[in-house]
Image 1 (cartoon, rainbow, N blue to C red):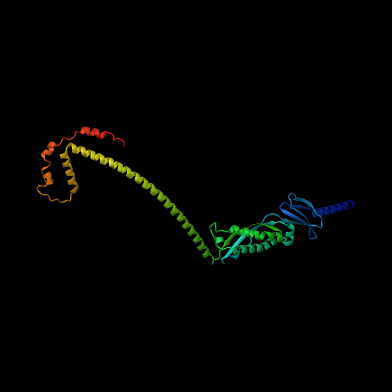
Image 2: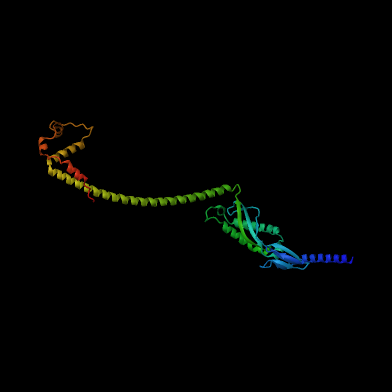
Length: 324
């Protein structure tokens, strides 16, 4: 009986020790802030400095509150806003934030959900102010010189950062536009704007292409004119040498047999003025009629030298032409 009583007492003491240990020992996770409060008043904070994660001791009447210290991504629902040129625009955004001051966060919001609900209104107000200062072209333009979304998000972040830390104890790390849709009544204006910008880009590209075409064409024309001028000069030189050679040959032929030379020149003259369809009326005393009916005179045939032999002509023809 006494042993049973002693065992029961031991079990009670052990249970009491376990209860006291569970109330006095707390574990601070490295992903959390651990805030110790005593009757609602913060008395200790773990996790704010490196190396504070692990096992910690508290008094049994104190309360341990764990607050997530990791980055939170908040995706508020899209809202319709008005641009600077009075166009409606439905904008969706997301906010990256984290708890920066656990005590202030606990007093102002207390939970992640409550903090995001209060952030939603502040994000909408900051976005509305930034969008209202800009025309639709700065948001919907594909021209990098007109596109202004990065500046817009920087302004929204600057407007949110200070009040969010002071009022909610949170740090807003980043704000970005997730998407924006144009209401039905705004879409024609947006499409017209995009088409106008594309036409301007196309006109600029065509102008650049025309300028390059004119430059290349002008250069090609100059090169062509230079080549043609050189070719014409070379042709004139060749023609001059040919005419000089022809004159020399004709002079040699005339000196060798003047009568035969005159006879050949006469035939060439008649051939140049007569063709197959020409009708010529000749008198009986015409030299041409006498030449056609009787042939060359005996005096011309008697005085003409014999034609050169074939072999010398072949040897002369086979000799290579001297290089100019």
